[in-house]
Amino acid sequence: MWIVKAVFVACTVLLVLGGTVALWLSDWPLDSKVKLTLLNSLGWAVILLPALAVSKWARAHAPDRDPQD
Image 1 (cartoon, rainbow, N blue to C red):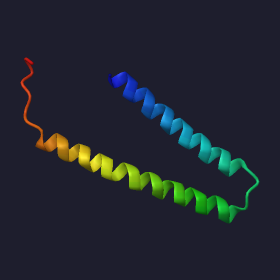
Image 2: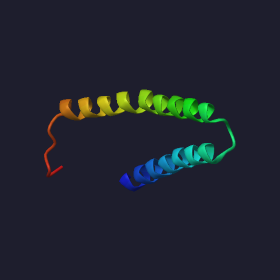
Image 3: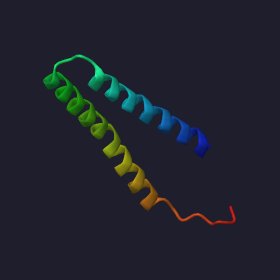
Image 4: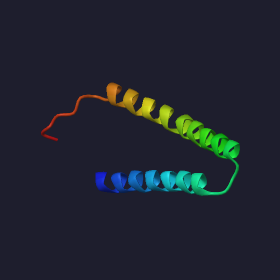
């Protein structure tokens, strides 16, 4: 199952980076490129930071598992 998650994360990262590179290689004005890049990074931060925080909180509050299970 971890392979599926790793592939999903890798594909997402490649798509985001590809979109950013395509934006910066386009002929849009520089101020628009900067604004869109900042908006994109802010959007990803709003999505990922709470998700990571909840994941760490859940891991800290999960009952200890017996390695024999």
